[in-house]
Image (cartoon, rainbow, N blue to C red; front, side, top):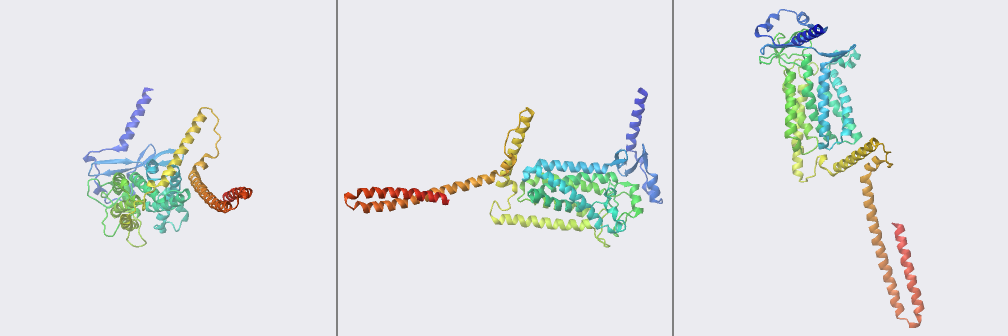
Length: 463
């Protein structure tokens, strides 16, 4: 037993040491020594096999260390789970948690938000794939079925944003969610998801840039393999050496997104003047960073046969449009002089009423849960949720009925006054008659009283 335990510890030690190695300067590889070799040959030579799992080496020559990366996290039978998928899932879950925790601060029902998010995910995946295929049509036109093989890669973040916004907008309309307020929450969620998700590119050794002499420049034999396979789109103005360190563009974008989230969350959210302003700020911030970072990358999508990068052009347009819209809308709010002009939904009376209904629903749910836990039969109530949803409408009807009753009372008073006037006039005329006509006077008075009663009843029936 002791021998088995010792061998297990030794294996774990060897495994950890092989996954994360910090060699001395003398052990760091001389990259120029690889210059005369074939990229395919080098790539195969540098593969490391640990317990049957193929891994790749990523080196940081000027920092003096290297990492052994395995894109596969674990396997269940023949099904493999990649680190890329796990990292993307972590980013999504954190973004969802943030959105749900902040939903009420933007005037959004958390339950309805989940429906919008589910639709946004589906639209985002479809949009990201279609966007990539559209600008890489030459790679798919001869094999249309490969369009559906998204597990082989080929997703574009801008396409994902467009798809998520379009489908999410339709779900917002269906679930009666304020779309512009939902965009504000989504913008901050995108920054979280992108900031974390870019580390999936690190594990796959992708989304890197051109050569650099900076201390954090990285190198891998996968870069050499990509170069010789023709999968890199290198600008004619750039001299690229596959054997020299390159920019870690994934790191730049990750840090840029995280910084943007911190600044917008802490410095802008409480100062927003209208719903949708935070989302416009996200587009401007992310676009500004992408405009610069995309110019360094070697795997960009191009517009046709031109040397224009799709993401760079789109980023520039989004920055310009977003900044102009923020300035124009804020100036309109300032000139209007109306404190309720384009007021965020969370500050309106409609949201306060919706909050009251949600709180009442939560109270009823808690009561039913406690009664069920205590073994008590549920209380017989008529459609509690419908009653709550129609409460505002019922209050309006009650107010209208009260106004009608007041009108009826006023009309009855007018009729009584008019009739009394007539009766008094007739009585005055009768008083001028001889005293022996008292019997006729009494009959006239009784007749007037009957007429007043009948006219009051007629007014009540008309209303």
